Image (cartoon, rainbow, N blue to C red):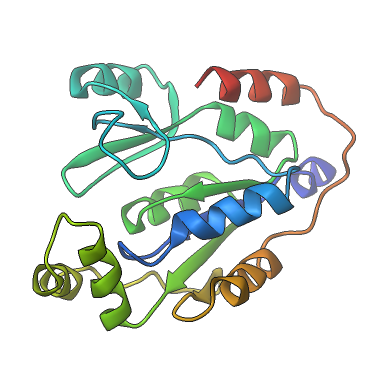
Amino acid sequence: MTDRLRARGVLHLVVGPSGVGKDALIDRARVARPDILFPRRWITRSADAGGEAHVAVAPEAFEAMAAAGDFALHWRAHGLAYGVPRAMADALGAGRHVVLNASRAAVAQARAQFQPVRVLLVAAPPEALARRIAARGRETEAEARARLDRAPPPPTGPDVRTIDNGGALDDAAAAFLAALAPPVDPEPEAGQSRSRLMEERS
């Protein structure tokens, strides 16, 4: 049993406010670490809403999937529902690391269900965040600042690693990659092929 626990993959939760550059860092990691699973999220917003590539799902269908246990993890934030397919749990159990673009609302649930967990808190100065959000064209810089002021406090704890993305992206990407768990033994375990298949289908 001890050996099995040691073989579990690490769940990396990437969290941080809007405009902080989580997607850019995850994209760098996806290229540098092909051994890691980067699951695509199911979100109750349209596929052409912009932002990350995701699977669009109607609210009623999302609720049915959640009730059926189709998600390894699901939460609500900013008026939307987010879910991650059970392929993530299969991958972790098979010893594969996972990097997930998460929300602060999901941290407590993930800590309770999946261990080991690393919380990668991406941070940048508020003025930089407000400029980045305003550049998207959906909010003015003043509106962005007001939204950032209302944001909940960041997660804390010994599993939190802070990544400063207020400067050069290359520097932040290097820190992000250094915070990831090292590659595990590549020997496949039962369930790994199923996890990969489920992820491709999602």
